[in-house]
Image: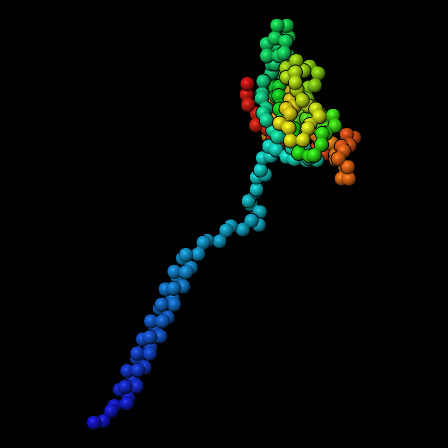
Length: 208
């Protein structure tokens, strides 16, 4: 019986070719599956058309004093005498613009008492960079009698509240308030009241 080696060689070649094709198909399918499972790339942050909106700031710690925004109320163009500390005789206070009362809290995160007048409220600044100073004299009757602006802060005591009233333009938006804190010595636990650091807190203003 003669063996036909040519026929056997042809059959082996066909089988090997089929196996190669099957392997290539399997590799292709595996590649597609892996690629489809990958997460799409994140958009590039270098795109000049994407503008990152700065996060609002409602609290900050500086020179061992933690300052927290508590509330801001818009009283419109009239501070009613009936809402003052002297409702029986206090006259209304009016403006062509709007009265905004801002309250913050100050807490000592250090190891010893602060000095007097180490912290205080500064100006209100709107989105256009306009500055509005606090009305410290005429609006005193509307501030709490225990208003604690600049009070001595004892370590880790409950935050002390500080309130001031500002006259702000009716068109002003995007309001922030300055908080002034005396610089603290790097070598001693003392504050230098002649030098101030400033932080800005965003305001959420409620209409009264």
